[in-house]
Each structure stands twice: as C-alpha cells, then as structure tokens.
Length: 378
Image (cartoon, rainbow, N blue to C red; front, side, top):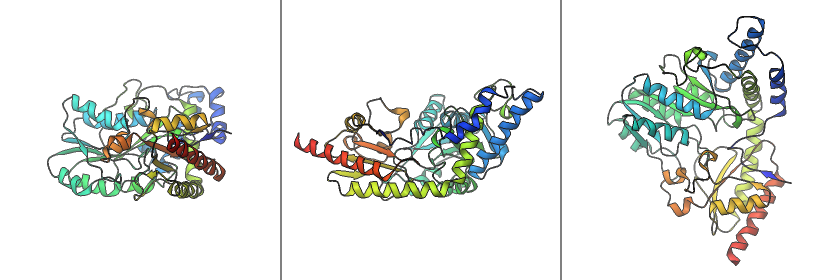
C-alpha cells in the first residue's frame, strides 16, 4: 500500500469537509452580493465560515479576509502594508516561505528597503542580532512565521511582536503550517498584526485561505472590483470552498489535542528509528518543532535521489517546500540556517498526517535501512 508522508505540502480532503461543501457545489447558487434570498443564503454560509476560521485563531470574524490561499495572504499583507504608504524597512526571516521571501524581494525592486532577519543553526531567530537590527532605523513591517514548513521549527512570535511594536512596526506571521497542529490563539493574542492561513493544509479544499488583519491596520488591496471583503479583495466569493475551509477549521479546533498527541507519538517513533539508523541526522533537533514534521539527511544520498528512490517504493516524502521543488537548488531554509550547500542538498522532509500509522513509520524506517545499506555497498 502507498504511504503519504507529505502533509505539509497538502492534506487530503476530509470526507466531513466534502459533506459540508456538497450542498454549495450544486445547491444555493446565488451571488453572495445579491440581496435576494439566493444571495442571502450564500452570504449566510460565508459568514458562518468566517466565524469558524476566526475561532481557530481566537480572532474576531471581522478580522478575517478571504484569499485564495497562503501565498495570496502573504502577498496582500506585505504589498498591502507597503502600498498603503507605511514608511520604514521591511524585514523577513531567512527561512520564511517563498511567498514571503519573494514578495519582500519584489518590494525591494520597487524601491523599498528590505532586510533579512538572521536565523541560527537550529532554525530560531537570532534574537541579539534581531534587536540590533531593529534599532538601526525606522521599521514598517517584520515577517516571522509561526512554524517552518520544512524543519517544523516554532518561532517565538510573541517575543518578536513585542520587539517589533516597540520600534513602531507591524508583525506578519505566516501560520499556514501551524494551523491544525498548534493552538493559534497564543500567537494571535500575543501581538501578531497580520496572520496567514490556508485551508488545504488542514484537510480542507485547495484554493481558499484567509488573512487575519488586526483592527486599525491599513492595507491597500491587491484586487480591485466589486468591493467584497471590505474592499480588500474584490471578486465573487467561492462559496463552496469557503464553507469547506470553515468546516475544516472547526474540525481542526475540535480535534486539535487528539491529532497533536497522535502525531507526536508517530514523530517520536520516527525519530527513535532515525537515531538508530547509521548515517541519519535530523535538522533543528534541539528546537521546539511541530508534532508532525521531521527533516533529516541520510549520508550517501542526495535528497532528490532519495525522494525518487522512496517514490518508486510507494512512499511520498519531500525534499523541501513543495512551492520551490524542481528548481535543482538546495533548501533555502537550511541555507538560511547557515548550513553548507552539500548538507542542504541531502534534506528529506517527512510530514505526518492524522491518518498515518505506526506500521507505516516502521515500513518507512525499514526502507531507509535498505537504501542506506545499498549506498554503502555501491
């Protein structure tokens, strides 16, 4: 049987989410902006989902703006703040998702002063360097993610928010990977001004996400049109996808403890097996990490080659972010942590899901042992 260990790239659609979406795929078809009963039914469904997604982070429904996913949310946050006229520098962590990194760099090409926040060898913000960096001039916005999509490292964004606010800036935190695996309320109530979310990372449909925007934060829209989402995101809403996101968020909140405990047990079983396997080394092993994520290298193998060898055995893993795969470059996350290129080339990421089993972990470890022996014999 195939094994799917790439849940940080995307998760399967939960059947309960599909059930919630089904009526809106073929049933109430009114435009949510229409005032007749068909439009009101669609609008009611959207607002119910807004409540569900807000609850996932302990936010207010009015703070939720629908987007097409985490990438659009990060673009809206960074470009929206910059184009609203806020002065000062834009900072982002060296291990941020490409949707933050590349968006920030696009602003550099438009004349904004953009700097990288140093990350240490364990994947955590270099706090003394960050404090010194903040003190060097006016600040517009800083971006530090809740949890890294490759290493699983969890950042102290509450500390970051306090430092950023003390220097007059805003904090964007990408919570796409943390949602459904960690309680998000401490990160939102801890001072984040903007927070990105994505449905397909927590067993919801693809193509729908949200940006949480704290009251008083000024943004310029990316998409102009009919004035939807308080004028911040024009375009007729995808009602079925929004309903699915809401259902997935409610399930993630309700089942958070159960899922996290199950994932942590599987992760620890995997780690124990890797520690017993000659030539295996885990990245950011000493840092707080997501309960489902392990990034490691196996001596004698490049990451892409190992990925393909496992794929031929029916095991799906990743060599880094799905959004930057196929570029032939080592993980920018590991390079951002200061690791050598040859080490970064060896990276493999296992990201577990709620339906994985101990038997799958054991089969995966056995397969790694066979591949390691083959490499030594070659």
